[in-house]
Image (cartoon, rainbow, N blue to C red; front, side, top):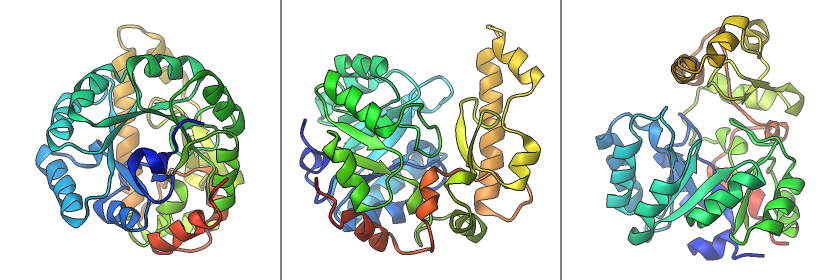
Length: 317
């Protein structure tokens, strides 16, 4: 096995609180760091550069422990260049790249001593980012929440650890220490965990959203292509059932048009994220709540430190 996540970052446990769009905030990051694990937040959770800088400064003033920031590195993120410049200037500990080539991020981060972890869902892309100089792979499997992969945790971990030499961090389906023990026995260097932390006291989402995480189970998670332009896992609420999970004929037609495809995807993503934002923070009949199958194991709302305790008991292989 390549170096484990705890040794790679100098933390107590090989656990990363996954960056969650609209949800991850400084309270969650600081609670994770205080509990001996690491965490990351999406740069897009902050609308301006000033807000992004303030969030990083707040965390650094609280602790010197390592944390990261997630960057969307494709053309849909108009702020990407400025965000990367800020993260390099402020020397965050690591950057997680998603939905695009990490080449520019790696080239700028290496001289600054910033590690780069890359989201991957298959071996082909994993080999490409390893060749570019990535420090670790975030193996997004079919149990992940949000933009999930298509391959089972064991199959994906085995595939990547067999053919790649850098650490593989498993993302998806983790709720207990025994889950971490299992994936690390397959060769994973650590885990990225999101869904169960959404039901934390520190998470800023609405009480209705948190109650949905408790009330619904794994069988209620469905994949929709109507919200972000890419398949996204959500809770199958009555509104989602009414909305449907497949793109309609016009959306499919427009997405096939080469000259319009990029703009259609951007529009779908913008409209979908606005819809998710409304549902996350306020009462609305249009409830679109992102989550992964791990909601099966969410039974109450607790402080982050208690959820971490659930993960760190007997976590080692």
